[in-house]
Image 1 (cartoon, rainbow, N blue to C red):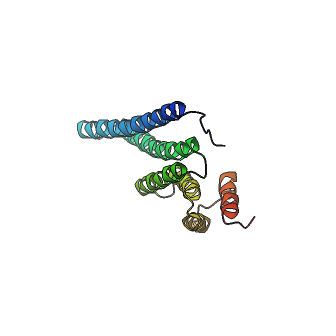
Image 2: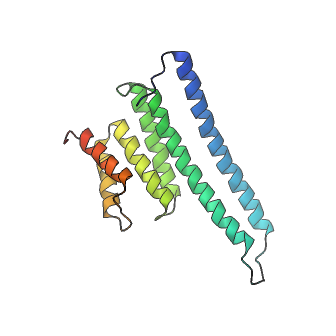
Image 3: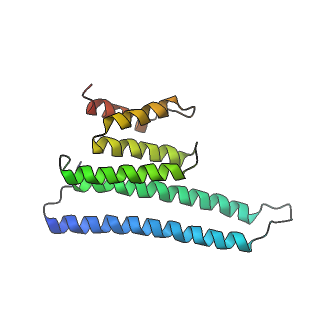
Length: 168
């Protein structure tokens, strides 16, 4: 359901908040990267039999970076909800979401939950932008993958795709 604010002032306020969230997410990503780089240089490998805290931190860092990438994509798709579906602003926001999703997918490791989530958001952004052919390609790629699954999210995206193609 589209939010469709009744006035321009409310729309501007919502756009500003979402833009701020996107900026905060990007800044947090950069801060985490710098902190991790500095910590990696300072830490030395553990010589004891205990679990190495740097290894645990690396795993946590990777999960944080992956989650931030997915959140950034999610925010860009959410931004489309501020505009009426038939408007040029809606299509433009969706096109921006497609670009952000494609960039995020490239940065995520294969076989991760984060990459599957990012692909689902890419399909949603593609459908919103009106590029049903590209959405279909992503859906076919996901179905062909060994980790492919028929979760409710993917089934819903498949139905949305079929509706967009006029098959249902």
